[in-house]
Image (tube, rainbow, N blue to C red):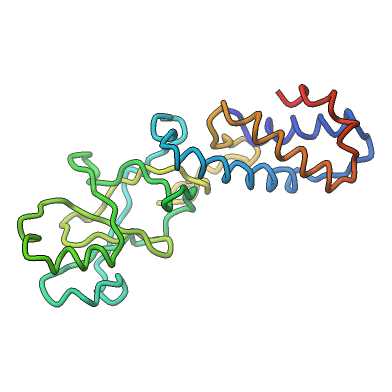
Length: 221
């Protein structure tokens, strides 16, 4: 996959070609690229085109859980017989799609099941239904950076998601790579569109007339 350094360098090369004096930091370029990548990711998620790209997803194989009360889990409406577990630490930031954070698979660490995502409100309504006692599906919901799991016995789960934050430093990981060397998490076929949109905005910020750059757009790819 394309790294952050490669993506920012391509944009910088465009500006060097049209204006040697254009002062744009790598951080500014990256933030603009990230803004448009998020917009494109939401669009692709709405069109259900992301899940087939294995390279976009990474798995945390062991995410520890702790027991919490129903109030914290937004399940006060459940009167009896419900134990709630929550991820012990907040998850790294996840890219948001059209329906919230983009998780591809959440379940036991042995991959023996896949949990179904719901909201806490929907789950409470389900529990109150007369037929819920026959429901054998395991559920989870996401709130404020944490995952919540009602009535499961596991002490840990695995989480596969499209992460915006690096997973370095999470769950005891110590080998942190340089930010610029990390992969830019976007399908390759969307890079040209993201870079074109970003270049147009940066041209405006740098006060470079767009007609001077028309012949330079192919430098991006």
